[in-house]
Image (cartoon, rainbow, N blue to C red):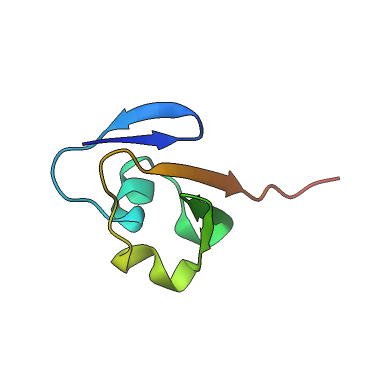
Length: 66
């Protein structure tokens, strides 16, 4: 399965959730906002949000500083 993550193709083996994708890429789910196919996904739903072939995912990470 291939999903588009921040404009680039990512190949995933088998079923995946938003949470498993983030953890697999070393991204802490507590510090990001995710938009899946144009809809914001609440952080509480990351573990139950299944990804499908062709999904478009944007992940924005908060960075502190000034």
